[in-house]
Length: 604
Ligand SMILES: *[C@@H]1O[C@H](CO)[C@@H](O)[C@H](O)[C@H]1NC(C)=O
Ligand SMILES: *[C@@H]1O[C@H](CO)[C@@H](O)[C@H](O)[C@H]1NC(C)=O
Ligand SMILES: *[C@@H]1O[C@H](CO)[C@@H](O)[C@H](O)[C@H]1NC(C)=O
Ligand SMILES: *[C@@H]1O[C@H](CO)[C@@H](O)[C@H](O)[C@H]1NC(C)=O
Ligand SMILES: *[C@@H]1O[C@H](CO)[C@@H](O)[C@H](O)[C@H]1NC(C)=O
Ligand SMILES: *[C@@H]1O[C@H](CO)[C@@H](O)[C@H](O)[C@H]1NC(C)=O
Ligand SMILES: *[C@@H]1O[C@H](CO)[C@@H](O)[C@H](O)[C@H]1NC(C)=O
Ligand SMILES: *[C@@H]1O[C@H](CO)[C@@H](O)[C@H](O)[C@H]1NC(C)=O
Ligand SMILES: *[C@@H]1O[C@H](CO)[C@@H](O)[C@H](O)[C@H]1NC(C)=O
Image 1 (cartoon, rainbow, N blue to C red):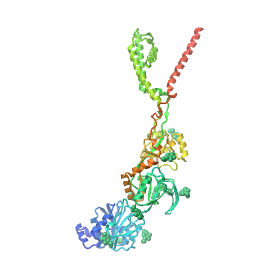
Image 2 (image 1 turned 120 degrees about the horizontal axis):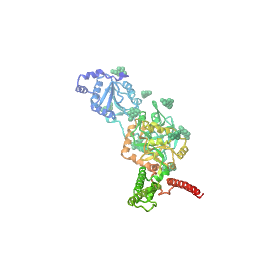
Image 3 (image 1 turned 90 degrees about the vertical axis):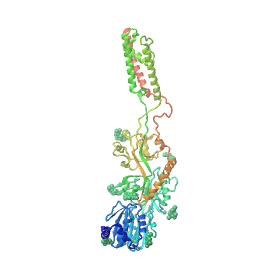
Image 4 (image 1 turned 135 degrees about the vertical axis):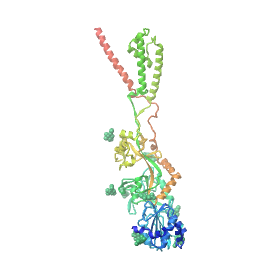
């Protein structure tokens, strides 16, 4: 094949000795193509490309002149003799249609951004093999010959055909917001709230492929953020459509070596459909197989986790003070009792009851908490005055803090990070297939990679509901525009005891998948829709109309707030007090027992 692309070395060599000025002299010898026209044709032919692959076959002098004229006019880099595949501009120059038609075989014509300009230094008949549309697939083509000029109709229209042109401006390729002239596009989508609410389908066979097609004649079904964006595109780009469901269990499908299996991406890959939407994530892996548009929004993958439950602690009475305060209180009691006891042993003026340490300790504690204590306090009156004052402060602080604490419930800690989720050993699941963990979780994170261990396939909504009732179950879903959308069917009552875990596991941009010839138009539409605020408008509008309050409520925390006013005290938080009381009774009973025994002995 290479020989078709060999540059006519002798043609070039005949010019390499001179400067470019010499070439222009050559052009002046009455070329059949006006160089002003040629310049405009080159400009219109290369809309996307900023480099060019050049092939020449032919030996006539006009070929040499045309080649030199081209490289003089063309402002960007060019390669000759070999194909630079990163470069989508192609210039083919030859003396017969047949040789050029063979050369086109090596051009990547399936890529819609390929731009080809062909110059035939001969008369071209309408039945020439070069004017065979099937040669050019999705590329943009202009042909200039001695007998006429042709342009291949736009790659987004079908059927494509060569049209004769008389003015160079007709060779301009249309791009961006174009008129598809009512072409019927095959579209695939699936029911994913809030992006698409289509659901009713009928079975049909279109283009030899059997599929389930959405009826889409119901106002309530033809709704969803992406559906709305799609309908605007259909109107602006002037196309009609048929929407079908992906066949098989997968929504988007999975890559399988060199091809893509199942789902909407599979349909796009096999070219059964022209456009795919329904939460298509913009990923490198997908873009290796199909073309994706610019994104229009982003979603976060999140879990709903059970709300923390209120807890009751027997030691609630100790809660008003931190441990260090308790230690300080005990320390001052011991210090004070030792001080008073020591003073009583030295100073005889102090009442004699202070000479016993146990009595002193009991009295010091009694005075601190403000219970009754003997009045005789000679010698330490001032000291005890301060002690009473300290007691007043400690007891007041304790009582007020206790009142506040005992009447508001205590809660378990919240589950807010992936690490806490893993430690809580929560399970989660969905119907049909497990998700693609690589996309849902960061598998390099030691905790995030353990999230997949909790996955269990569910058989039905009832199965899920029983798990929700059992507890220890998390609900997977996505957050978009501050609303949580569960990935599985759950009803409002199920969500009552759920809240959003703060940490997301992943984030994605959403785009549309499209055949390459449609991508420039979809991209332009997407940018316009974002810039004009229509994306934001439809997002808000659909959510306002379709979203249940409970999907917002999961963002509101219920723990730590006293929704029902102060509550009556329960036994358990007061446990510590009763334990002390019981201990006191036991001690008193034992003492009573020994006293009775002694009394009996004395009586005998
Ligand atoms: C031009 O193409 C023909 C085949 O169509 C080939 O025989 C010929 O060698 C080519 N010329 C050059 C200079 O490559
Ligand atoms: C166009 O080319 C295809 C193969 O590339 C061939 O099957 C078809 O017959 C050609 N059509 C005409 C009119 O030559
Ligand atoms: C091809 O286009 C050029 C530029 O518009 C024009 O000058 C020329 O007449 C056209 N050739 C034919 C045969 O129509
Ligand atoms: C859309 O395409 C149809 C069919 O070609 C055409 O009749 C109609 O004028 C086009 N509408 C617009 C707005 O361009
Ligand atoms: C339509 O096709 C699907 C699978 O392709 C099948 O499960 C379903 O029963 C069909 N529905 C009707 C009404 O034939
Ligand atoms: C790809 O999918 C086909 C069936 O669709 C299967 O036979 C084949 O083994 C798969 N290849 C790989 C590499 O998974
Ligand atoms: C479409 O995808 C192919 C490869 O998958 C890529 O070469 C091409 O540039 C893409 N086209 C557009 C318009 O993005
Ligand atoms: C976590 O739960 C699974 C099943 O639900 C159980 O088999 C496993 O022992 C639990 N692990 C821990 C650490 O509790
Ligand atoms: C809210 O959810 C309930 C049950 O999940 C459903 O029946 C109802 O239609 C929903 N309302 C809206 C506005 O979506």
